[in-house]
Structure formats: structure tokens, C-alpha cells
Length: 324
Image (tube, rainbow, N blue to C red):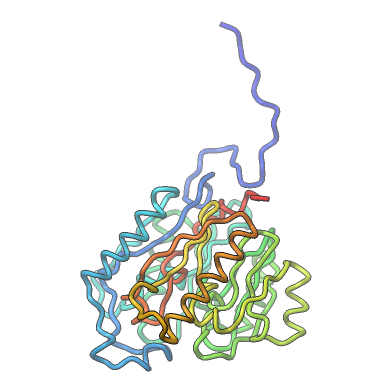
């Protein structure tokens, strides 16, 4: 038998020379989701929820589960989706929104480090030990920052060790100083003031390693100038952000976004706003060689959430490739 010489090809940055021991080390996309067993809107902990009457805010658990599975099935068909178990603990009304649970440091050393959120919102405080226990059981090294932090919903990986982090409503700027001191990362800080866009993923979405959707009108010029040193900005309007244009997730060459346009009456303000957002996202996607896939997540709107809230990145393998 003729021996075959090992390949001399050097490994790409996203490839591993050893067998992966966690989802972050896989050479395919990996995400964390949570089935809505504990989902509730009992406590209104954001302005969107406060504006919905109590009776109208109660979710249909059957419909919420169907909507969850529609999203889960699509993502799982093209990636590894790990499902976070729901402990039999009361009060975990927002556990389904896993993007808030923490941040996996995709750039860091052996890609085995998770920063778990430090919540101050009463309905969410019990999620921190859930996240710590889960990620430790998975073999990750876990850290909880000493100051407020609400996970991947507040901080986005741009490229290399560069991130953009939002603060002012749910997270503290000191949290990002702590990250920079301890984890060899640069965090561009953006001050968030709009109560309707209370997490960074409402107004910032990295679509590629080089380009990022940003609602520049929401931030100071000096902050945008600093961000532009690290990424090319595609400007989007506040109106489109209210409709969820930045609450998207990239899976390979597809942008996943929430839209309940078929539930809305044509010609109304809500319908026109949703239509404008969808058209703007499709125009951006087309210019960058992406497709768009929409999911109706109307039951989660009652919790003040959109698609990106329900998906935590365990790695960013989709961003390893350029489409153009």
C-alpha cells in the first residue's frame, strides 16, 4: 500500500488541528437556543411590554412553541443547535432569549471561554447561575463580570479581537473595561439612550467581518468615528430599527429576521413600517449576495423581543467566508 503524505496545507483560522471538545471549536455554525417552557410575560420589564395591556400580553404557549420550532428547525438544518435545558425554577420568564445569557469569546485562546451575564432586571437575575452551571457542565471556563452585563445582545464581535459594546440601560461601560483588561480584546463603546432600543442588537448588526449595519443617528459622532476605524458602516434608520432590521442572525449566506407582516392589515402604519424594514433589509442583502428568510415570532413580541434575542452564537463560523 502506498503511503499518502499528509497535506501541507496550513489550517485556516477557523479550523482546528484537534478534535473539538465544545460547539465553539466546530468547523460549522453553532448556536444556543432554549425552548419556551418557562416563557412568560408576567413581569413587564421593558417599554414595549409596558405599552401592551395585561390581557393582550399573555402569550399563547402553543403558538409560541410552534414559532420556536419553525426557527429551530431551520437553523438546526444548517448548524449545530444546542438546546439549553429549562430548570424547574420559577421566574425564568425570559430564559428563551438566550442572546442575553452571555458571550462566547470566539477570538480567545482555545475558544473555550464564556462571559456569563450579570443581570439587574429582577425577572432575569436567576438566569446567571443557570448559565454558569450550563457552560461549566459543557466544559467551558466561565466568568461573570463584576458590573452589569446582558450578554451577546449588548456586544457584537466585529473581527479578530475587536468588539462593539452598548451601555447605558442594561450594561455598564466598566464591564467592557474589565473585558479589555482580562481577555485581550478591544471594545468600541456606544452609549444607548433610546428606551425602545435598549439592547445593542436593536441598532447594530455585523453582517460581514467588514461591514456592519448601524443606526448612526442614535449615537454621538465621536462614537461613530471610532467605530468606523474598525468596520464599514451601512447606515439604517431608527424607524427600521424599531421594526427589527438589526435584530437579525446570519447563517451562511442567509440573513434570518422576524416579520409578522402577514398578520398586519395592509395600509396601516404598522404594516407600512414592517414593509419598509423588509424592503430595506432585502436591498442590503441583495447588494452583499445574501438571501433573507423571515420567521413570524409574534408571540415573542409580547415579551419585547425579536429574532436575534432567541439565538446565542456559540461560534461565528458563518463569518469565516466572504460571499463577494
